[in-house]
Length: 108
Image 1 (cartoon, rainbow, N blue to C red):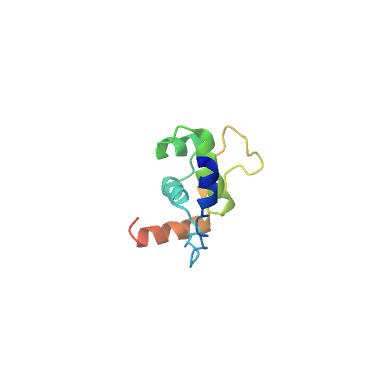
Image 2: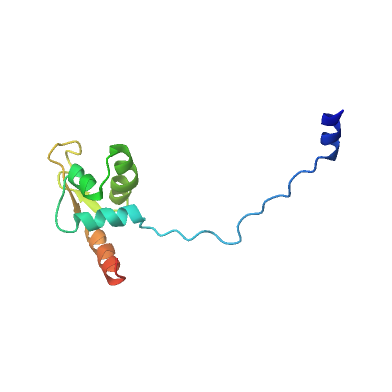
């Protein structure tokens, strides 16, 4: 039958090898750069940053922009003892200012 003939003539595809080099990953991602540019002029609330970036989906904003910037030490909370406060804002750290200076020096 045809199905048995197809199985008999089947050849497995060749093995795919690993890439020769690892991809280059910048420790500061583009979304974080965009966030830093927004916070450069002073502390902003999360909703103000999100609006300035033109984002509508809060979970995406938090996962791709806010949390990576916080974890990288580029921004900090103005009220660290009250992370869920309605008055919470975020400002640049010394590390964030250094990254911002690098961005300005390369013309971004």
